[in-house]
Image (cartoon, rainbow, N blue to C red; front, side, top):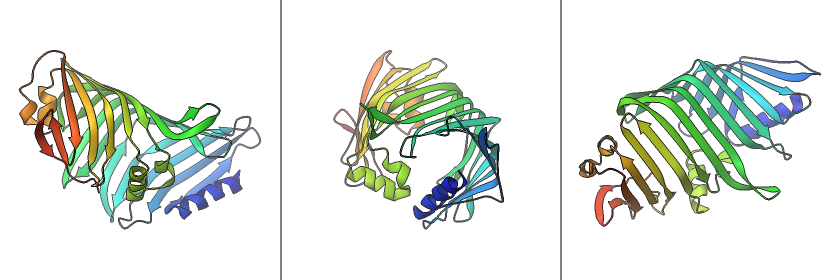
Length: 287
């Protein structure tokens, strides 16, 4: 197992991600395999020299099922870019499971956290978010007996609050598929986005449901990136109490729409966001 771990670290280094620990221990054999990494770090080789630091990372795999790895992390998780801190993630508990397929590649990931808080920098401003309970589930979509390049996702957040979203805490649930999402496992940053775009990848949003006080919003649709690296596609927003949603996203032109059970199609095309035939906002390139 030690040689397999070293091979995985070497493979990551070949992709420009360098993993290291101040102190690494292995124990538990022959009944199980335990790995503990104190002051874990992963650094990217790109121009931003981005780096993530974690106080402690522990992983356990039972000897009768070494393909299933249980991971626990001790925070905080601190993210740097160009030696400047850009994000701080803290939690009361954070657990994860990772499943490896027959080719020793990851095909399923689940992440569950309680009392999670995030502080991050965006356009020179500091923002804060928090949730009492959050879940993230990812898996390569099965097609018959094989696995496709598409990644299915399911996300839940209870008691979600943010400065950018003033008012009562929200309950959020979303499911969907990232077509050709496997590229994000093997590549990074703009390279991953550009490869995904050229492969005509899309985010298929089966459901995004937000409940907050008297506000209930459902979103479905499909989004991609066009040749200008701008969002393209369409999402349909329905529900009630949408006024605050539109205002918080800078769509004040839509904030007068108060009808119950309203359904609003938002179309992303040719660098603009449209409501029907009306241009609402100009879209920036993502990279």
